[in-house]
Amino acid sequence: MKMNSSATILLVEDDPNDVFLMKRALKASAISNPLKVATDGREAMDYLAGAGLFANRTEFPIPSLIFLDLKLPYKSGFAVLEWIRTQPSLDSMLVVVLTSSSEERDIKEAYRLGARSFLVKPPTQTMLSDLMASLQDYWMNHNEFTTPDQKASNAQ
Image (cartoon, rainbow, N blue to C red; front, side, top):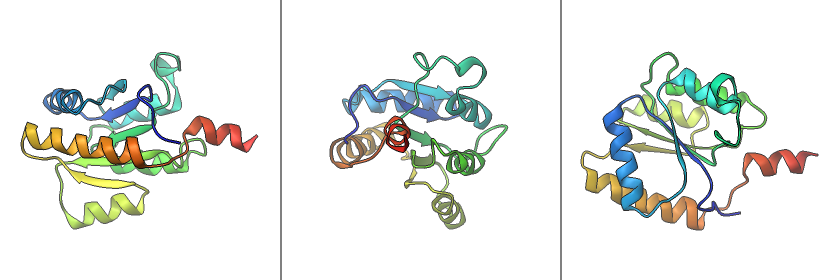
């Protein structure tokens, strides 16, 4: 199954400037998928669990793709990723780490914890837009994947 244009993307990012730049890059890349934002690790986990303010799944649907920063308040991106992989309904979730770190230990740890891709935030808006365009082509047009909803229905 390919990701359709109604599939939600969750951006886990604490820097409002990076959120703004990401929204612009997605728009410039013709990615029209709904975008939800979690501003810290704990909020991301609550969103994914459907807890508290995020209980309404019509308003806060399970995302098909997560862009996850590593350096977050309350819970690090590593803690979020590790938690995702322990949740049976989320363990195959498509998580792309998008962070400013290019340290080898961060890359290794992200992949060890189950990241599907590790990307370093580009230094310019144009480069970020180009990166989103290439991701749109690969992840949304060519990659085949199972959504959490499909996985749950297949298990029944």
